[in-house]
Length: 347
Image 1 (cartoon, one colour):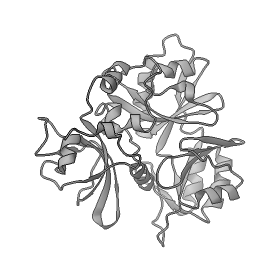
Image 2 (tube, one colour):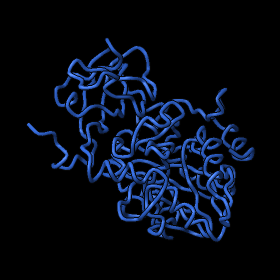
Image 3 (cartoon, helix red, strand yellow):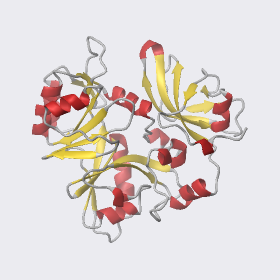
Image 4 (cartoon, helix red, strand yellow):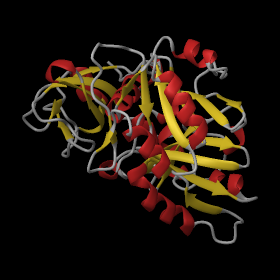
């Protein structure tokens, strides 16, 4: 977060907590139309004439499908096919940006640089290059149009208005990420804040959970192969692009293996807020280890928590998945994009 952007936000009602996150007071009246500071998400800038070909050999999606009108979701895996990061990948001008939680940037940049070798490419923390804000709610398209900004109609599509870029984020709630220089974003925030209530990062996380979009945090590094987090169902994996780090394992799972775990939406009532990486258990588990893990979590009203969890399919079908070994039973449901019929376990 740039100093000028932080100073702008904190001259109003926002404050910065000890973890460096911007916090806004709860709105005085409930509203579904909300405005977000997204500085908890970091940006990696990939520059150079070999940027696209380099990323093609590192990420799960086909970089050739990026364009000035389309972004994509993608993963970065270990050689064992385990996810090290989940990205939104954007080509803005001649720079490719990888967006992921800011906490993951140091490790990911260090690891990607190991594979550069003689490629003409540079990687850097670009989190301060562009301010990122989010707008969510049924009236979001209308309010963006009032600011003479284009609104991409399809999920993951990209539109530009000068040096301001807009991405349509998937999910049941209309939602947009907007990126641009500080001056332009200050003007836009001031205009939108008269209509939408500023909200906190955990509320953006809740929208990601409700959309079934996975995130990899430090606690869940190498916990999942992409298919476990439904990356293949949200256009986050290409099975025709060719080789990339971990590709052999990911492809074998898709074409030769049987998926035994996948990601569900869940709700639970608990006094202890769940954390990414927390273990799930089931009496009917076919594994000697935990039957799953929490991918992401965000609070709801009334002491309930919304979760994304990776769980054994058989245990989920039996309705016996618990948060912790002796914890409450999770209420599981399909994500909004559903599960393919052929993945359902045999009766």
